[in-house]
Length: 453
Image (cartoon, rainbow, N blue to C red; front, top):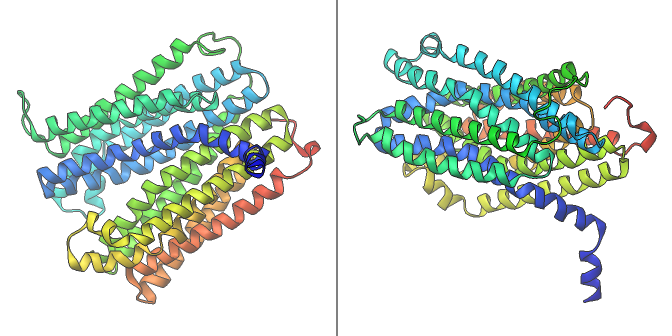
């Protein structure tokens, strides 16, 4: 009994418990972001397969810009955590206010670019009918990018303060609202005609506006230091854009590479691209859990970095890497053990199931390094190293994963399995580079911490 008590009280397990207490609401909140898109497509698919194709295609360019925008806005969490660690909470409020400006700029530019989606789809070789239907839904979804980023700015602000429960509650409410609006607007009723994919796009837009207003109100009502009082800028405006831009570029490289793998899978036929699509959507959903753990790790690393506590940085990173590795290993093994029933959830087509089933056996090899590289990447940025993870993403995903995808899938004729094998190797390379870099930087002696935080 004493040995169990000593194990429970070990500082490492205390660190893990502290980190998980911060991480689980963040994990659920990130799951909610993905769930909203899944519900949109699922409800539209019940209405019409044709409209489901519109919605699926519409989400592709929107997703790329949203992920890039998240990179910009995550600078709120990075600088906010550091400011709180430095004992200067007003600068966390300044980071949030600058984040609002970034949301407006990035969201407005995204909406403008996506307004030309019908023409873009035509240029990419889509049929006139598909380009028109998906393009109209994309235009509405484009208007939702800015409010979605505004919600995340507030969420990152609260998460930096280690108060992630409120964003989670708003995300749960928004998902309920989105489902109700989907069922109403997609199928019609109460004076509204059936709108199909257009209705689902409006449901997402309205739900994200609710999120944006809710989190803005919550931050404003909390009235933390620096939130309402303008005062003088702390001179880190350019630094926040630099951090956000580096993260946005890294996220863009990763998402663009995974979308490129979809094209490569398509060279092997419809079954290959459909199977890869099922695999990557499940991978993205599971990845949200790893992302929640990574964000929590980044918060603790950032606060310790702001306080100049090298030992606390090391402990937070060790706990985060351990929990991320454990979570991804368990979820990957679960998919491998129950790959048959999971495949049946996604498709009843025997041919597609035969192609998809072997891919789920590789899930554990894909999700573990993907989670580890994300934890290392966010920890490095919270520690002040913004450029290296971006270069690593460019090398690992664009220079390694994409060529391997062409080689394995197209030249070696391995189809969808070859594409997933390339994903595994690209993620493994990224994990090795970033974890090695993190160990090198985070375990340096305290005097090696930079002056400029």
